[in-house]
Length: 302
Image (cartoon, rainbow, N blue to C red; front, side, top):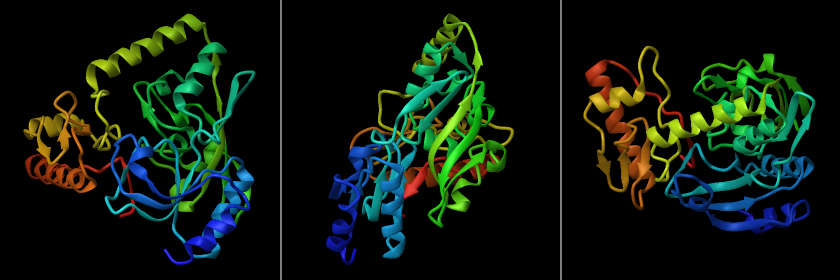
């Protein structure tokens, strides 16, 4: 990256936390990936806006990172600026039956606050290991719910530098999709609308979902969650298992024998290991069942 010292000087006018050559393996649930040229953690929307503007003005790539639970980073790292919204931009507030939270807030913490306020409808999100910004962007879901069921509105930063509020109806939320990526919006915060419900019922439902996850998912290994989207009329995990890939490894990457829909880091896996494994799985499933598996994880630095 050219003029890195100049960029850092400009950024330090708006933030105090700027790191150089930061290992992204420390910031992703896969524990995989090379270094970010610059890693910055703004503490306000205005600071985030300023950092994005600096990147745009200097034609530098940037990526907004939550807690890194749904991403795979190149072994070469990211030749640009990683803007982390996790932790610093994660406030949560409850007002009546609505909860407003910043993009870096963990879904599990929002679900816990909903439980404490006796608000039902967000139990499905309790075990999803992501942040609100990413969940809104990809319309995350699990079991009996997804974001579009509860999302009321979202505040975004546009490419023009405008901060504006959008109703959920304008986001074209579908299965693991929205207009946010194509419009290059950055989610700043969102408001969900829930319903009053007995707290014990909420607690029991969250416990049930947590038990199901422990029983069926390889939670004791680093991964990026479900590797593939659910193909129409099929389950990705079953197709992969029926193609003989349970426990199959490439380097340190492995198809989990506990749930074949997960590629896990079984030990010092590289990004190349994971991509090679994914490609082999896709080719075999296409050959055996004429189904093209699409990845759900986001690729950084590729």
